[in-house]
Length: 263
Image (cartoon, rainbow, N blue to C red):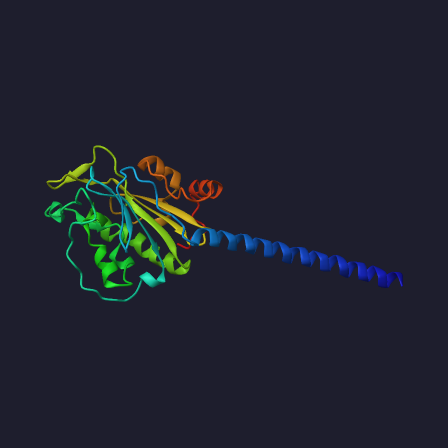
């Protein structure tokens, strides 16, 4: 009888232990789900603007800097729906009629030695021809060295599309670091950034990664350009993801660990 009682006690202890583990796992899943809901429902992910000149298109939202004749940032959501195999006819670059001060004329780039580098890539907007075409407004371009544009920067754009599918959607913010005393091109003195950045946040709010890439071609692996959002904020004066809860924002933005991302 005593032996039977002992066996019953052991079974009861193990059952309670299993119940505790299941409860903890359930609690952790609920925590993740709550985070997902908080991030994905009408999440205002747009950064602050140092110019107070923010405009929204169907394809992207941007903050235009008249001083530098380009956007200080371009922001958009990207998922598998935006990607595709559509072979749209490539349109001409034109000035953006939304910009009250007028965006830079494409002729500034002519014989400058620099590409008209997309900030929101045309390849990220293939859900419709209208979205694709909007990436050719000059509000969405910045002077980029050809080897940089077709090299390391293109590799980062391709990897961004890979992550957008892998993680079921990401928020993208990108631009050149606009500072005083930059080299300029054209009659309108379009600034040539020394660095470009790209910041990514997964739709579920669990992963953030930031890249700061010197404006020159490089064969280095992309993870060598990973930095914290805090570093980019100090360089640009822009506040990224300010609508996140402070605790989550601080934790994500100070992190420069890329191990959660598959390179």
